[in-house]
Length: 264
Image (tube, rainbow, N blue to C red; front, top):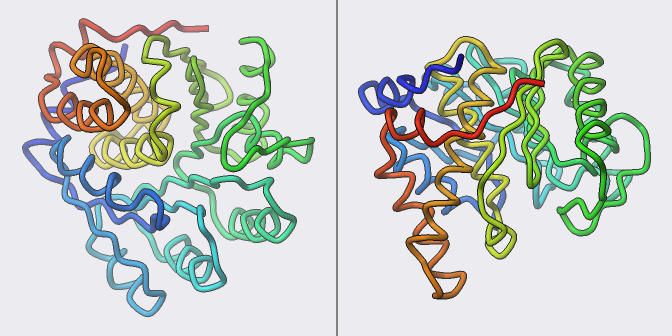
C-alpha cells in the first residue's frame, strides 16, 4: 500500500531537490517542484556539483540537450551524492555518443530510480530503441513493457519507472501499474522530465525508491486528469498551467482516493 501522506511530509520539510536539467524543461521542472512543496536548485556548473550535492536531499540528473560539461557534472553528482539520485536518460538512443555517455555514467553508480520511456529502456538494454526525438513511438503490450522494465531493473539493480499511457514501476520483484492521466500530456514538452523531478521529490521523503516512483507516477497521473478538466476546451498552454495548479492544490487524501494503481 502506497503512503500518500508522504506528500504532507514534502510540504512540511520542503526538501532541496538538485536538478541537473535540460534547457528545454528547466523552468517547468523548477516550478513543479515549488508547486508540490519542494525547493528546487537548478545548478549546472561541474565546479559546484560536489558542494551542491552535500546540501541536497535528492538529485535528479536529466541528460537531455547534453554536452560534455553536462555529463561531467552528472558524473560528479553520481559519485558524490549521499542521498537518492534519479536518472532520466532523455533520448538515450538518439546518438551513439549519448548512449555511450549514459552507459559510462551508469557504470559509475546505481541510481535510486531510473525513469525511462520504452525506447530509452530498450536502448539501455541493447535492443533497438527506435527513438523519435526524445519520445518513444513503440507500441507494446502491457506484458512486454512489464518484462522490459523488470529486465532493466534487475540488470541495473535499481527501481525503474517506465512511463507511458500506463506507467509501470518495478524494482525487479514488485510491479505497479498506474493508469489514468490525460492524452493531452503529449502536447506539452517536458512532462516526462517533470515526472522525474517528482520522483526526486518523493524519494527525498520515502526511503523505498520503488514506492517513491509509484507515488510520483500516481500523483502526476491525477494532476494530468485534473488539468484536463481545469483547462476544459482551451489549448495546450492552458493545460500546461493547469498541471501546475493541480500539483499545487492536490492533497494527500485526494491523491489516495483518486489514484488508479494495479499490482501486477
